[in-house]
Image 1 (tube, rainbow, N blue to C red):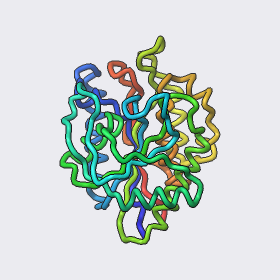
Image 2 (cartoon, rainbow, N blue to C red):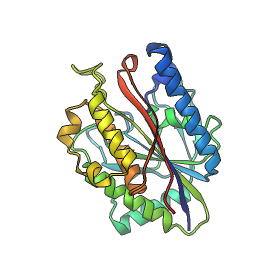
Image 3 (tube, one colour):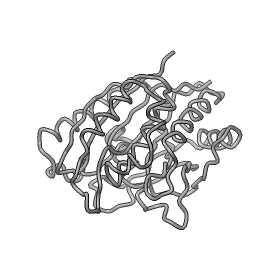
Length: 275
């Protein structure tokens, strides 16, 4: 059976690549160092494939078609969709056998996945991919978790989907090792009246729950309290899916910095499964 070997959660703001000068130099240095630490953990894990969880930022999906969860099913994909991220456009290999297994397993066990057979992914996926695997050596399956437009999947549903993802990996009859990378958050409000506000208290509360492996408390978060902390704080749903996949595991915080120049509470964690 396949093995879930590693989990990584990280803010995916593209300014860490394209406009690092916007942030406080010391904070940006800690954010960059965190990515280096995560990249080392990924290299040590010797995984055969990645699942990359992120919200699409109204590039692939729009209000006429906004799935709660969508799998990319193809041999490879390109990104980023945006032209000004500083991330070089490149093609990333995927693992269609893994994607098809997750699709079929989900339909049999409680995830009605949407699927995309063509997808130019945006910075939400490409920032972590670029900084964790510069040479695009590891096949990656992108998974959209809707954090862009309501109605959103609830935190409880996100946690349950994570549990089902872990089950699907364990039921895949191969000896491959899989890592899950969750991108997004923490508190931020790009493009609205709250832009620039960072809710440090909420970020610390959320990270404390993640570090404790407190799945019940993460699942109990409400859409309203998340939205109150920032219009795009909802990207933490990707982290909650990962927490569900690593049910009960304690995450190790790598860094947290409320980077005002990036208008985002930026954080990174790593988690290893319990065996």
